[in-house]
Amino acid sequence: MMSEREYNPTELLICIAARQMPDAVTAFIGTGIPMLAASLAQKMHAPNLVAVFEFGGTGARLKRLPRAVGEGRTFYRGLVASGICDTMETAARGFIDYGFLGGAQIDAYGNLNSTIIGPRHHPPKVRLPGSGGANDVGSLCWRTITIMRHDKLRFVPKVDFVTTPGYLSGPGAREAAGLPPNTGPYRVVSTLGLLGFDEETRRMMLLATNPGVTVEQVIENTGFELLIADQVGQNEPPTAEELRILREEVDPERFYI
Amino acid sequence: MHVIESGLGEMIQPIDLDGFREWNREKKSRALVDKLMSEQEAISRFVYDGCYLGTELYGTVRAPMSLVREVLRQGKKDLRIAGQGVAELDLLLGAGVVKTLDITYIGLEVYGTSAALRREVESGRVEKVVEWSNGGITWRFKAAAMGVPFIPTRSMLGTDTLRYSAAKVVECPFTGMKLCLIPALILDVGLIHVHRADRYGNAQVEGISGFALEMSRACKRLILSAEEIVDTEEIRRYPDRTMIPYYLVDAVVHAPFGAHPGEMVYLYERDEEMLKEWVDSFQTVEGTQAYLDKYVYSLPNHEAYMDRVGRERLAALKAAAEGR
Image (tube, rainbow over all chains, first blue to last red; front, side, top):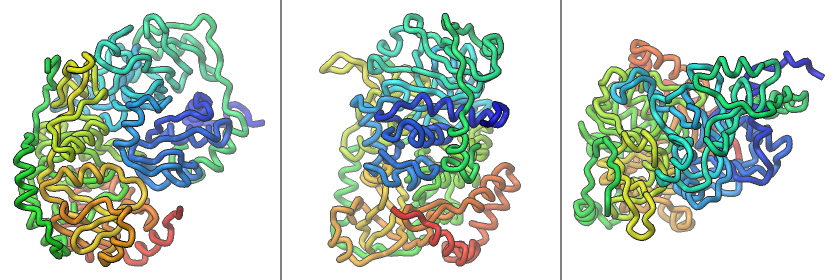
């Protein structure tokens, strides 16, 4: 067995994200870590995970790592190669179970910012790429899982711009805004731990810490008051098998890891 | 219909549906006219300063790179842009020719944020930025394709993306639920790169369709570049594969490797080394200028671009294409 030191933080994020992906569900997969996690999940416990890429690829065998959300590998040996209206409208009808997201900032309600940094929309202090499909995914999928680096610059009391809806201002706010009921943030996979959302307050709650991380460290690196589960679990480090598949099969070119 | 909220963003391209119908009646010939022409002719005839331009597909994939390089070569400026793309829009931003932007995503995927987008938007040189989601901007094309002024959706609600868009929130007259109305977007000029077309503009795409179906129907002028020009009989043999019928099209340009340094599914791989050269160059203003001089301004046309890249290199990308 490998010792727990022999993996990097990105590999840990990918492995923990992959473990959140059940078999035989549909999931919107975006560029970057979600792609690696989906590929790893398919090769581990979820061979029938249906990866949906927003520009039209559905049900690909993620044999080789896609480097772009529109490229051939997003529908390699896939079930469907359609277009973005089809995938987004599939989500709008309630057919997409999970959506994987990232962002520059997240708040206690899981609202995400990937548009600007700073107080003013235009011209902004820092211009980020923008919503892309994230807003649609965060609006229309049943459950979203966000993957983020964990520090106070990213876990903030108030995001500078709500690009993608989490629970907005709290309980009932999504429904009041007109978003489909029973949707919203489900998990946050961070470099420090696994987080969920309290059913009543809709605020972020620490569920488990990553290997070597204390609850205090998570609190210190979070810019808002974090709820702590009654029993905080511990995420298992990547197994030798997960690391082998990740390095030899998922990303042998070392694009990301 | 009761309007509950209006996005603060401006309608960069006002909606004129009846004008679009008249345009399609008067300016789009139903005759089979030979539209095969050089990229110089296509861009000089149909793209003009200040026009509203859209491109398809996304990322490095099937992007109309040779056409966009020609837009820059001809010095077109003050462009208004539908910002759902990556590579080709990064080029336009790097060259400083974008005035206003309906944006959903401009970034470099695996290579991170776009330095050119940051420079142009943070400096205020891009004067207006209106936000959308990928679904949102595509539904704008779909509304135009349907000939209606808007499409109701359940995206963008409750967010700053909506607040800084030009969408509106209304109460549905049938159900009472809140809906986001996405306004139609009719492009002055659309640029789409396809796998094959005939000289009249009948065109087929392989792999995912992205938003070519919707966008091709939402353009006053549509310029196609194609990897291969085929006989119309070839189109007629597989009419089920035709995505774009000739009457939507104003120009057909033969452009093998027209998406380079990006990829064309089943035909050629993306050119990783040259994508890195691009991304590295674009980190600075000087580097961007040097890149554009080397690969755009100093070259007369796409043929010369292919020579500069190297025919052997292109052949290797073709050999590396992944199969089905």
